[in-house]
Amino acid sequence: MAEQPKVLDQRAPAAATLETLYTVTAPVTGAVISTIVVCNRSATPTSFRVAVSPAGAAISDEMYQFFDRPIGAFDTFAATFGIGLEVTDVVRVYATLATLSFSLHGLEIT
View 1 (cartoon, helix red, strand yellow):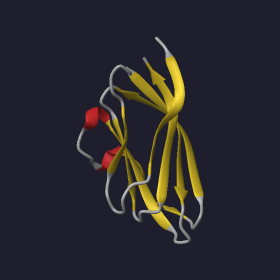
View 2 (view 1 turned 135 degrees about the horizontal axis):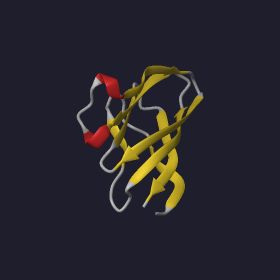
View 3 (view 1 turned 60 degrees about the vertical axis):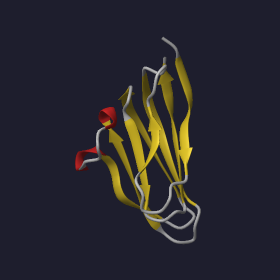
């Protein structure tokens, strides 16, 4: 079993659209999210959502880690986790405005 720390994915999603940030896919057998960073590139405050969907399930309320979390103008938000993911688990993000960048950092296991 090999473990590889890395930037799992980065995305600047469209406004008001729930998008996939990261999916655990083979040959990776699992992953651990260590940190998610959200950066507001605008002078306008906004908000965001982050959800973890086991086995790629359709989104539902209990999957949200953050829901309409405010983020200030030109601000950065970072949360440190230890969320374990299995193959086909999906991390999804939503930006109220198209001015946010998401970076997911963690460890992939093969």
